[in-house]
Image (tube, rainbow, N blue to C red; front, side):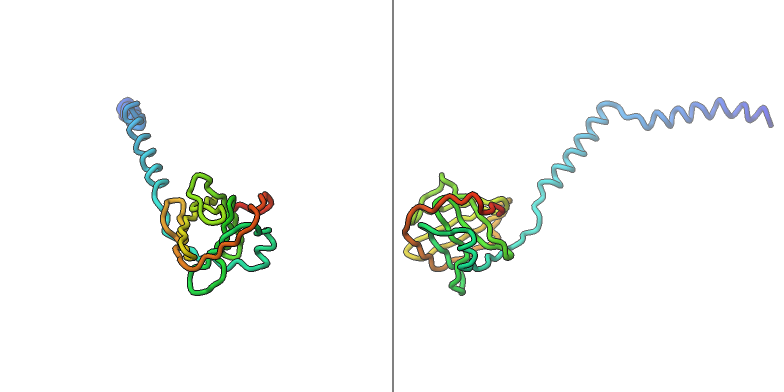
Length: 174
């Protein structure tokens, strides 16, 4: 029996070496596997999340006082409730989402509307596009994938005044 055990060892070694060689991947195969992994990650990252619609809250007089929203501005009041949902100025705009007032930056390259306001305002998570004609306005809010997450139309009230003061203390969190 001892001889057969010693005889089996030389045959087992090549099998073990062959198994360890199977774990090694050629450079071409590794490159292909890496490319597949990169493609899977890119596909996962490019998938759009589910659409989440939003609805702006009414900006109260207290909100406007807290953020020093004064000077020349336009107040958009879309929907059936006549409360202001968006206030635009020449340099910025304010909107209230989920109870938080958020400041957006005016796109100086966009078309100018009444009182120096603009047709485009940018925030961190959303872009607001505006249209205005004869006291009526339309608001479209788009997400990072350029999908409309809110759209509304209704009266617009523009107030003349001095150019809105720059307000660096207001949060720009939209």
